[in-house]
Length: 607
Image (cartoon, rainbow, N blue to C red; front, side):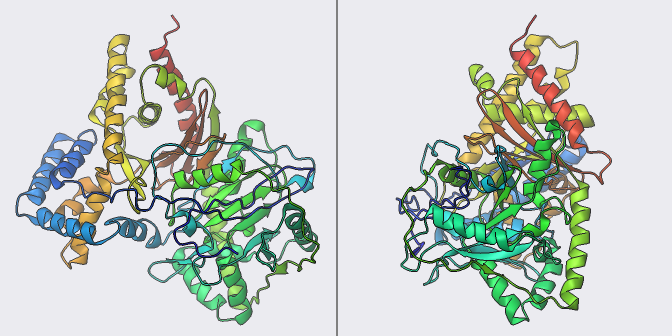
């Protein structure tokens, strides 16, 4: 049996695609391994003066001199000895001494659970994995891809058990996360969704042993035989709504006993397995983008969006056409630990043991009683989701001219190299630099989540202004480029030491609110609004597979860019909203390809 999840690291092989004799197998297990809960240090509260100086330096490339002077005076007043900033700093340091992590609970509440936006596109990221070559539908659920395990320093592992049997629950003002894996009788089932129909599939035998591949395969065949036709009412679409709207519909839905039981089984399941219909075939060039969009949001109400329960923490998506990936709810974990989980899943080997000769219970189909109100809620959700999906432009491509080895050969950080390239590409499209955030892990600290690495730095702006200036020599451009990349690397190191800017500023602001004080003027300043209007939401999610993560922009006039650098190529995903006339994902993608080529020429001139 699963037993208690407290104090264990879970290595999980859920919808593990084992391609074997054209059949689908599913493996689930928990393995006790040493956790690094206590061996990682607590997250530090950075010095106040350091954070305020860092904040001002990030504003210098973005503000005109008069506005910068105004903001500098305001920041100096806030940070003066004996001022409000010093008072709030002391309170944060006290909080750090008496809590596991002084900022993570606030961060999760503020960044995720208090957001009222729909989860698809705005919040839930997707990982699209390389397409498998299937020989008919029987191979839909299977595959094996060898990858290396995670190396390096111990990281805080406590979030892994929380990924399973958990679900986000909608509320009127904020949501909460329900964890069911730590109960006395931990769930032993997953939810399988096909053609908008939900099934409860037990993955453990009555004696507590986990089911074998052949057992699970036969059960999935049973589910397939029961779900030939698409359900008229795609219940999962409800979870795509604005959170307040879904919260009201959720309460109406649960008034019925049958609905409450079915929803409960979805929420408590270890994870969901979504068996999708084929993605509409288009050109190979655009297929990667369409495939990633399918995992991200299901493709719309006439496609596979009804096969999702967007509140569920983990949803493994497998299409008949070979497309597959993982969609996850981000309030529990960000991209890097999810990618690590995938590494473990894909690295596990099939278990060849023979199935016991015991009859298996029929997978249980979950039924819903749909009254007039619920039907109306579903129709509204369908309309709103299709509007959202049609508004999102997704561009996924594989840049093949070079990968992370090129920067390494020139003693440059690959991530810093790409970040400077992103700012240069953005400048070439929009004739300005913009506030950008790069998501960095804080899991080297106990209970740590993420922090932002801010850009552009002054060195980045100097390089950008010089790069397309024909009067500047190549040698000067190369020197400015190195300075820009090195400056970003130094900033990254500071963030990884727990000395970033944004979590600290957020903590100071929320501490003031907790004490019943007015929000400090420094956070009401127009400069703070500008500096946190992230027109570039970026994230490196390195993996040992040719996968790519995909998520939506943070602001209506912005982009989201995710990338996975490999040795000789880099996978990119770029998203933007069609409703904004200024942004265009394809234009930025083409400019980025061109820009990366020019930077290669700068490092390795051909003439």
